[in-house]
Length: 279
Image 1 (tube, helix red, strand yellow):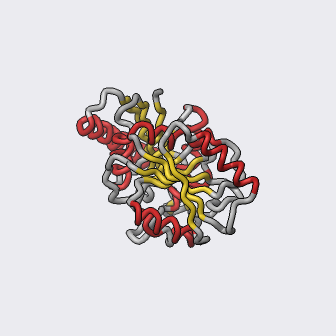
Image 2 (cartoon, rainbow, N blue to C red):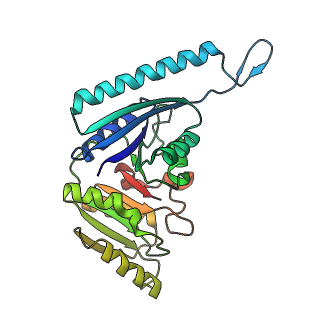
Image 3 (cartoon, rainbow, N blue to C red):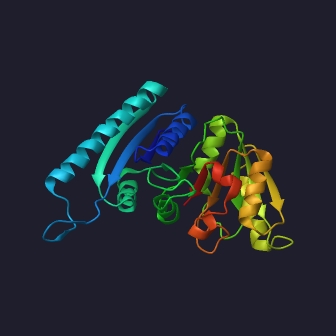
């Protein structure tokens, strides 16, 4: 089945790492890949006034540069990957990144958003930039795959799905994760981080539903007793050299605030692997 993928890019090194990763992970199937460069203008001061709308010359120059860089990106991808299954499109738009992505996803049947964890202007000690956090938390109609800096693609062998087994509304949201597992013969490791000694009835029921849904792929279920989600995930990923971490992002779940600014600094080892947020 053809994938329809949106990749926002600011032409940074991390943005290229995201492009490289998705080009490899979906190398075997047809894809429509949309590269989007979205720019916004801060207000600036003239001799007589504070101006919030750029002059035509400024706008045209920035748009020209954006289109040039998008064309270079597409040529680089075509040259490096030579994948006839993939078709590329470019979008250059003056807008806020969130508004653009929200509208584009709804109007173009996007299956997956892929982006670097931080942009060109983010500090080296920041794990996730503010734009990425905004998209991961607030885009609710499409899964988002965030690629950290310095991730070199390797065929995934283990995909971690972290869950609290609570409030499961739709396991069909796991289709992206299951598809990646199928493509690369990878195992899905369902990781439950215990906050209590045993599962309640609702959690047991949800676990049974999940097991049925995963029945066509290789999977296992692991339980950890440490209630600290960040330390638990970090240690687990590090000890097993896991290749990707996925979870549902929804209100009142264990993972609701995982990308809040204070917590993102403590993400540890699993900040070094791709993170798939399932909406």
